[in-house]
Length: 186
Picture 1 (cartoon, one colour):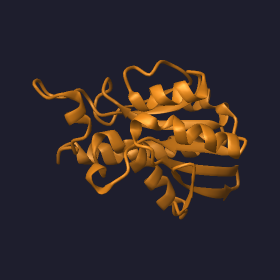
Picture 2 (cartoon, rainbow, N blue to C red; picture 1 turned 90 degrees about the vertical axis):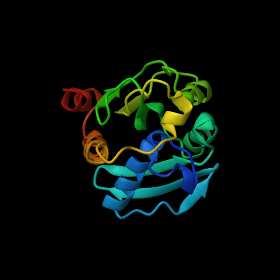
Picture 3 (cartoon, one colour; picture 1 turned 30 degrees about the vertical axis):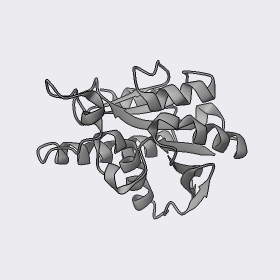
Picture 4 (cartoon, rainbow, N blue to C red; picture 1 turned 120 degrees about the vertical axis):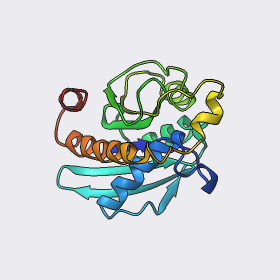
């Protein structure tokens, strides 16, 4: 089974914020695949989909960003999912708004959700799709920025990034992640 994890924070006040781009991508996949996230386990909301490429689980950890690993690790253990069969989607301050960067490994780069995953998984080697949210404007603190909403000008760029992320996930179901990286990082 493939596991697609989107990182974010639960609750209305966090909807459509920069830090919740992972949740938005999972919601877009769920909508496209007509797979409502209506199951819960280990403080995560998920859907399991049977596709021609095989079984896929979409997961939104409800632990809040900084504790994401507390949901993902037990889900992987319970459903016997291998680390190479997981893709994590999350926001990245170091990429321009809407830019995608696919990677197979790397440090947390200051991202607390990824720090939690690395801690609970015991490795930095897992597939990821980073979605750019850019750096905060001068004088704005990073926590305030990541919890802010995208501007009207950024909205269409982010919509396109979500669509591209959905496509990258779909392609990854039938191709090696390294090949998907080549295709989507260009």
